Length: 389
Image (cartoon, rainbow, N blue to C red; front, side):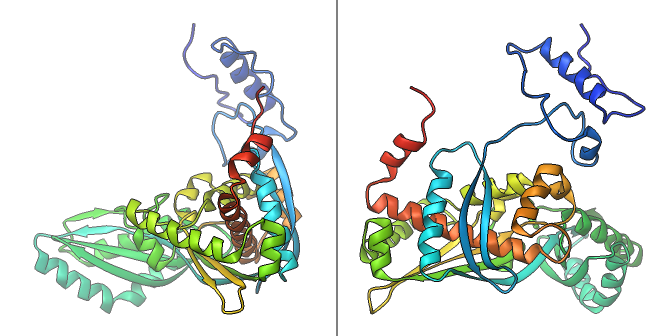
């Protein structure tokens, strides 16, 4: 029996090619594989998104809302698509959206926008590395010219420098339009670095990515300096609404927030929130984002205040939300439909999507946090989160 996955060298993105692979897998599976081959789009629509196309992984999708967003790019009510297999998730976000809508909506602000590639250059000594740093500063404009020549949308904002031993790490910061930008920044930085290597003879070692952009990893540098979109969502909740919708009181939620901050400090987390990854993962899958970017996108910083009148202020800062409304998986059929539902498909809409996602995250933080305080969390999962007898 052949172990080589079937492939059509002439055209591998057809139903016949996919069916051949599915049959190949059926011969090796303990199950029937009845659902993998069920999909409503043509395999050719996945070119550039996947190799060895065989079928589709169908994830249940629910809708939460309406979510009222008071943003600079997203304004009004939105029905949010969430692809998830976790019971209670959509219900919890829906509850938070109902509460914040009655309170006047979630105010959202995009603070910053940057995507990175971080090469390293090595030299014979630390002094030569120091000299290179000075040369880079003197030649920033030429570096920018060579980087931007490779892209129609990318703009090089600046180049940060970090040194260790006899190495210089350059952190190239770009804006990337409505694309997430990782591929663009890689290509642009490669072009710039090729010119640097030709122009600066003492370079002894070069590595295009030296793990300082921290692709698909949470990191302190991105928490401080932004990767993707840096977004803040905030709301003030009247005390009466908290008690009516969340079955607890603002002072109890605030005390729980302090206890959680202490627990997070002890455990060494770089996210003092409850579950930002839940909202973002569900929306990433629904809208065709790179799901692995959840690693850094779900980093979050929660801040809360119990106001003098008893009301409750709550905000969440997401410093490295990596999203796109153009390119990548956003053009896949069902993912595009979800983006269309939000009015977020295509150019000029990425900040709108970032604002909607941040507002959704805030609603889930409020709902889950209150459920823990009101001791409803376990009961809710028992009622809504079990699909077994």
